[in-house]
Length: 221
Image (cartoon, rainbow, N blue to C red; front, side):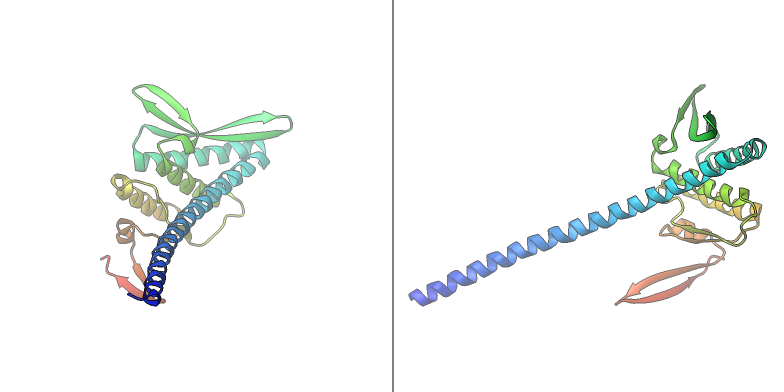
């Protein structure tokens, strides 16, 4: 092999090595982008949860004493019903209001009964994200039904019960149906959970092919 041929072979080898290195770095980049997207989604969900809690706190803090107690009871009852509907009778939701100077401060707790012993924790510390999902969903509905003048229209939900495990999902869609009937509100939701999709009176499956959205009407009859 001539010196020229050796140089060509060495260059090809280097190019191949660099190509393999680029492939590794590109795969690493895609993985990091996927992780970033997941973390951004988790952050958005966390911020949405915090927003619901803060709105409930503000409503309770700014209400007169009688109206505050009425709103407190309505929120506690609705969230407790939601937790018990989905997870069973051992769960309840409690709002504690304390006076700090001239203003009232509200704190939210999930109370669980373990063999006669009551354990009180913040929602985010109670059995993972599923409990937070249900508390946030029920608080959102409670706010809509409590604020005056009352807001009208459909209840729009994005990925309700995203962290609720499969064994409880059918209780969740039963609860959503009961909400719809109780408050006479249409429920429109976006979900990746096929059990929830099948629970609707009407369902549409949206897929993307080559950048074009295709809509399929599902038969839930």
